[in-house]
Length: 378
Image (tube, rainbow, N blue to C red; front, side, top):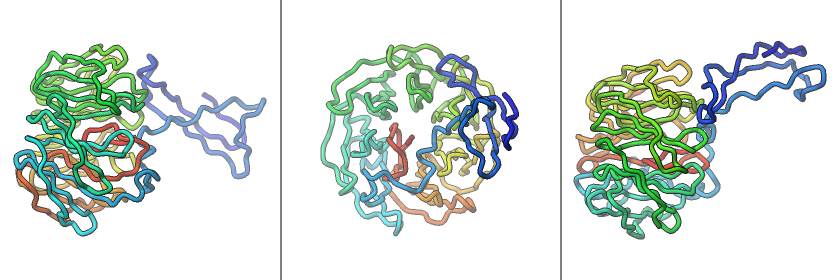
C-alpha cells in the first residue's frame, strides 16, 4: 500500500472474502483526504481500494424499506408450551392479540421478501403463515419438523432446519416445492448463518458440539470443527471473515475460521450463552446468557466484551428495536419478555406472556431482506 499525496494518509492492508479462497481481513483500509481534493484517481497517484463494507450496513439505519414502512410494528412471541403466539404493541408494551398455532412453536421468521411471517410448529410439522399487516394467521404450510427456517441471501431457497430429523430440507420459497436436502450426521442441527457471498453456511449441532460447513449449490458438507459443549446460535462477523458460535455449556462464544474450519478464539460471556443479535449500528454483538440472567456486549472490532448487563430472568432469543434504543428478550423459563435499554442495560419493562417463549421477532425492521431465524437481516 502507499502513502499518497494530497492529504491521503495511512493505508493498511485490506483482505479478500474468505469464501473466494483468499486471505481473511485483519485490517481495513482507511484514508483521509484534504478538503476540496478531487477523490478520483489520476495518472500521478495509484488507485485506492475502497474500505471493506460491513455486512450489516443495511441494518445500520432507522429507515425501513418502503415495502414495510406502513406496517404497524409488533413483537411476535411464540410460546413453545402454550402453542400460541402473543402479539405485543412495542409502543404500549401490551399484548394486543393472541392466537393458537401448531404444537411446539419455536421461532417466528420473517420471509426473505418481508411479506410474510412464518411460525415453525415442530411437532405439528407445519408453518403458520402470518400477514404482518393484520398480525393474523392466514395459512398453514406442511413441512417436516420446522425447528428453524432460513432463506439464502439471494432469496432463491428456503431452508427448513429439521433438528430431530438431522436434515436440512431446501425449498422454493414461492411454491414450497422441494429442492433437495442435506443430511447432518451429528445430533441436534440448530442455528446457522451464511457466508458473505451466500454460497456456504455454518450450522451448529447442539447435542454433538460440532459446527458444520455446507456448500449450498452442491448440497453437501464440506467441513466441520468440534467446538465441544452445546453450540447454539451462529453469527457472521461484520467484516465477513469469521463466525461466532454461542456455546451454552462452555459459557461463551467460539470464533471460527470458516476457511480452515478451526476455532481460533473463545470469548467468555456467561452461563448458558445462547442467542445473538447485532446492534443497530452494526458494531456490536449482543449475547444472551440464559442460565446467568445476563446479556453480554461484544465489540466486533476487538472481539472483547465491553459490557455485561444483569437483567435477570432467562434471556433466550433477542431483537433490537428499529431505533436501536431497546433490546427485546424472551425469557424461556419465566413466561415473560424483557425490554432492556441499550444505553444503560437496565430492564425497563417486563411483559407476561405464554409458557416457554422462544424465538421472538420484532417486525418490521431495517434491512434489504431477511435471511430468516427470528429476524436476521442484511
